Length: 112
Image (cartoon, rainbow, N blue to C red; front, side, top):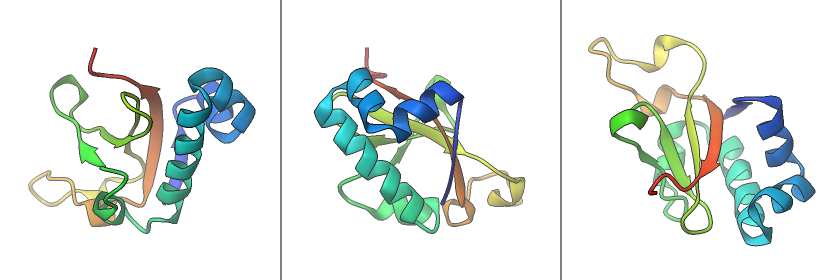
């Protein structure tokens, strides 16, 4: 899949190991780097959702439309589908097999 980032600061933190370690610690940074490789290697969101270790899942409530993959507990990598609207069915439901680009939004513990 193609990756976009919410802003340049987040891109730098996610793409530079030193910055990721500074922001989230060595273990979380290592897991983040692996997750980003997995996301890029996946053909679609449907493939990513099948990876058992990633535990990719849709979020609810005020985060509806976003997805998360597990990093180091309790942190998650949160992202949303990016690109055109052909990823939706006629009834407006998301079709994960059509999502081929995502926008990385944040690394966060949203359980607080």
